[in-house]
Image (cartoon, rainbow, N blue to C red):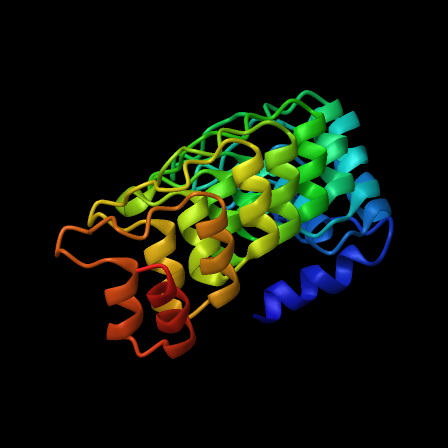
Length: 277
């Protein structure tokens, strides 16, 4: 700890001279705290611009994750390996996207970072940006040509992540960008299933306009209408019925939307569905 603190303080002192075996550690630290002039000095002394720590992080990754745009630019100009990967298979771009640093994302894209590079979770920077709810990073990646339909190891696309976590603006942005609204993820759930569970009418409307299947079925045979009924989202139930959802469909256990509403004592939905029963 004392050694780390010494290096951290030292990086704040432009022109500090380090022993050779300390240069790379000092560079990593300076990049992580955005000390651009210290980074410049350390590189001039011979620090390795693409050195890695035991987790595989590089100075560029550290600066990207910290949103230090000036430091990122300096490292790139000095030949930092933009394609280096850490223990998760993340690049600097993945790290910036996961943190929502849109300006850094743009810098890395301009420098040639692969917007569709796959990490160890089988996802891309877009999956990370959407999954963590970073709208501007999603927009920057879409502008750069990122594929919005990549499924990660859990079967989730960026749209499925957005719908599942309730990131409405990200979901709307992905739909407007032309992503496949009918791709399914874990348990064969669609984005409309997730929107129905959350009662997210705004996203559900956009999904149906874009061609989402109103009666899509999960592995257990559940439809979005059943999901909405079980959660008591009366407005969603009414909307799905208006859009042609079939209240008579039964899941693998023989349950309908009405029986789901009764099972979870969603009385308003029960009354709504009984009218048309």
